[in-house]
Length: 385
Image 1 (cartoon, one colour):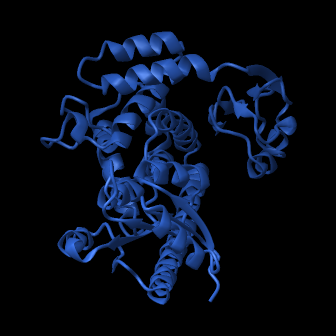
Image 2 (tube, rainbow, N blue to C red):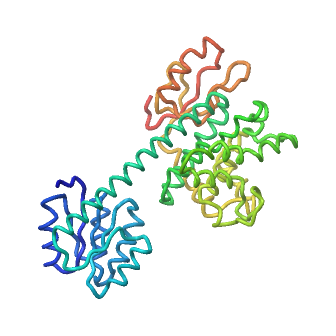
Image 3 (cartoon, rainbow, N blue to C red):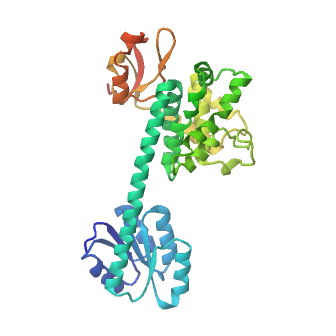
């Protein structure tokens, strides 16, 4: 039997740890730690680990506490607990709480330990394979939806692209777990725009006054997005973010329920900020004025998120240079700085969209076909061109 995954062994008794290591390292790549704190350090430095095996009784941090911390840091790592006969009740509680894959009584014969590790590695492989499949499936579905949005509503797609960039910066700043959920929600936040007439979408984009009928359509957009995504599995957290993206921090807004403050999903609170900021920018407000206007809207935003966002906006423009280039010279990595329109005012590429290979290929013939206004203003990082 050959194991191709890392295993971490944690025990405060050096002799026991040495014995475990001798038996396990013949079959797999094994690391050791003498206590829970050291184990977490090894996990951070040398992970990911397929399996962590820990003793229950250790000074400072017992095995259950340690493995709970492992679960928080590395949810897919499979956890095994070693325990003496007197601790069986505690070990059973750990299993029943769902934190432990299996517990083994000490002293544990080597064949039993190796079989338990083999089973744990197989469980790890199943979980990671499912995750990879899920990520690829979700990626394909999301890419298809955003491609449709790009074709049907360039305004909506550009707005979504900028929102993704902004929330990614915020999520990194706050070290948000499951960051993909927030970024996917941002990319899909405008998917409901496919139901809007072009003139209504443009009004919404520039923050212009809407008629009662148009406002009703705009208020309905989060629910449209929720229905469009309802049949895609595992997107429930994303859908919840989208449903609450119009919710104010003080509990007002949509949906009209009792949810407020920290109860609102973090991603929804972030989207509330970045989308309003984007609207103010589209109206021609400077970054500073946009943020001042938002600070004046009492109760609308999470104050901590808003101040963090303001700080990031002061940093994000560093090392970026403005350039004006012909459309044919757009290169991947450039960011569209101003809306690209035809001479008749039709939006072709929304500001904030990063140029990709597919985009540059798609727009190569646009000046000749539809008469795009050139040159195009772009942002490039570090003076690249």
